[in-house]
Length: 311
Ligand SMILES: Cc1cc2nc3c(=O)[nH]c(=O)nc-3n(C[C@H](O)[C@H](O)[C@H](O)COP(=O)(O)OP(=O)(O)OC[C@H]3O[C@@H](n4cnc5c(N)ncnc54)[C@H](O)[C@@H]3O)c2cc1C
Image 1 (cartoon, rainbow, N blue to C red):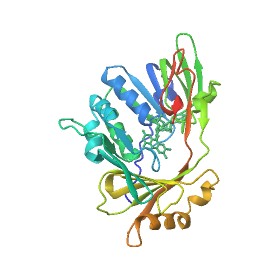
Image 2 (cartoon, rainbow, N blue to C red):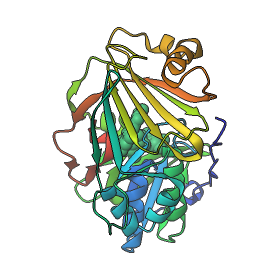
Image 3 (cartoon, rainbow, N blue to C red):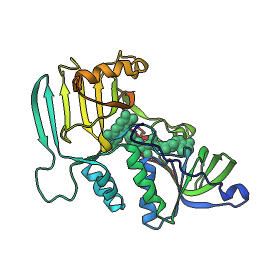
């Protein structure tokens, strides 16, 4: 990507591989936004926590971009709201178009005197970096990168984990396990648990583009726009002159074909005009799912984030 290089977090050989045993009050699986927030919250309450992540960086490519005022207030409590607001793009106003016409507009924060805006837009990789930096500031939080959980044995009094590292495998026990290992949740599968709900039969293309533009920092949404007839489109400004464009494609679209630049560029040209200068940073095709586990708590194992509920 032109505007971002993923950091590489250092792998450290765990003492358990050299004969030490460790029992932790809390282990968190997954250093995504949810696992990191859980770890910061615990560490701030003086609860020792070990975070295990199989990767050694933040989110690769573009995912979440919009963070609501309530989320910012929680981040303030955790000591990282300011970093997110400073890096992100604030917005309060949204406009909805139907065809050529402005159909509706809203201001989510019409009153003065609020500490935080209605929303901040920020690429998820920046957001996660803010959380990693904050978590690293606590002696009570230990982040272990390239530590993949390959086994979980829940007991009545403790949970035992099997963890794989580049140097070999080790075991770890904890009083409480927070599982925040994402939508595909390997741990949920290991425990034979499932989600219920539905997957919507539609597909959407997201293209993050780098573009210098004086479009306002507002959320613009189109139904049946002239540049993309019979479908919807969405435009959001993010940090570093990166813009999120989202095109509804329909269920029959081929996800692999639609990610190709030769398919994306004509759509962007039609939307932004022949004069617009931009480069594609990232593209992917997604489908909406609305699924959740029936229970988030299973004894001493607590599921959180996309592992537990997914929209
Ligand atoms: C295209 C797209 C757009 C989105 N837009 C928005 C938005 O605008 N606003 C919003 O709020 N959300 C948005 N989301 C959703 C958001 O990205 C997710 O909700 C969020 O990343 C979930 O965080 P998480 O911490 O639960 O899981 P994840 O971010 O998926 O993190 C899971 C972590 O677990 C680790 N892991 C997995 N398995 C193991 C294992 N066995 N051992 C150790 N570690 C493991 C992974 O390496 C990863 O770091 C979007 C998602 C997508 C795909």
